[in-house]
Structure formats: structure tokens, C-alpha cells
Image (cartoon, rainbow, N blue to C red; front, side, top):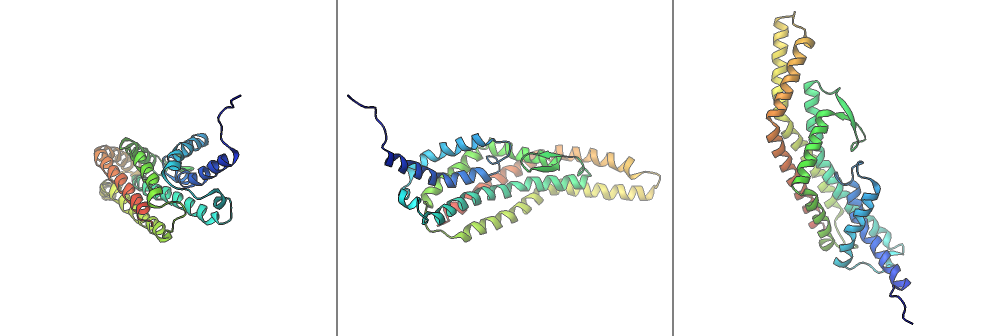
Length: 263
């Protein structure tokens, strides 16, 4: 009597052990990346995404034997895998913070700092302008297939930097420091057109109210500033979206340099 085909228990143990080890890097990346790791993405979706993305990794690289993975010798290797994934996701998150920095400074200059709502991705209250910029950057990132490019870079890193291979941890620290500096630079470039115009408008309002004290700053200056802010945001929207496109390209470039040159 023929029996149903199946997998022997030692072989199943080997597959599950290798699958767990291979999922550490991609799982850590999905946990810390700006789009995949947002609080609006439920935990079951992240788990299923990790499982689906780990399947091609199993056939792409040679994993350590299950005896090594089950021993204490695998602890540094697991820490290394999680560090690589977390660093890749955090680099993208830091660079994506340029949109929030620009929106926050514009809101503060325009007097819209009090207009804040709960941001699920940030876990706190952020100005409306910063949230709009964050949504705009996310839409540009998805429209340009940046999420697919980021996943492709992380999956290809298994070839350039196989699990358990020696790598320079300073590469991860250097990428984080570079991402932090680039975040402030890009944030300043995005906000400067609007902030510069608002500063000139505020100076003009100050001169007018100084010359005519009967004009109240709140009754005269605040409506002018609000109107000018909306007009400036509308006029600079094409340039802002172009800056977001450059921000996405820079983020993917830094991520690629960090993972492809990590050995």
C-alpha cells in the first residue's frame, strides 16, 4: 500500500531553521522601514510579507547548517542579520524625515504650529503641513516603485553580503550619519522657498504695524500670513514633488551603497 509523500522530520527541522535564519534581515527591514513599518500596517500583513519575501532567499543563498543555527555560535550571526536589516530600514526612515522637518518648519514660520493632529506613523501630534508633506513623499515613493527598488536592494544584499559573512560595522554607522546630514540638507532645500517668502512677508507686516499701530498684528498680519502660506504651498507644489523625487533617488542610492559595499 502506497503512502502519501511527505518530508522527514530532520529535513523539516532543517528547512524551518534555515527559513527562520533567512527571515531575520528582511523581517528587521520591514519592521523599521518608513512605509512597510508604519503603524497603519497590521502585524499579520508584516508577517505574511516576511514569509513571502523569505521564500526566494532560501533558493538564492547557501544557509548555515541547522546545527550551527541551533548553537550559541549563531547568536552573533543573528545579531548581525538583524543589525543589517534594521540599519537599512532606519536609513530610509531618517531620510524620509526630511519631509517632516520641512513641513514642521514651514508650519512654525507660518504660525500653523498649533494646527496639529495625531500622526499614526510618528505616534504623536505633528503639524498638518508636516503630515501633508509626509503623505506626498509616500505617494511619490510608491508611484516611482521605490518600495520595489528598496526590496530588490535588500534581497540582492543576500548575494553581496551572505549571512554569516564578515562585514564592516562602520559602514552601517557611516550610512546612518550620512543619512542624518542629508536629511537636514534636503529638508532645508524643500522648505527654503516658502520659508524665505514668509520671512519677508513677516518683516513687511512688522514694518506696516510699526508705522500704523492701529493695525492689530493678529487681525491684520495673521490672515495675510495664512493666505500667503496657502498660495506659496500651491505655487511650490510642483517643485516640492520634484524635490521628493530626488529625495527618493538619494535614499535608494545611500541604501544601495550601504548594502552592496558592506563587505
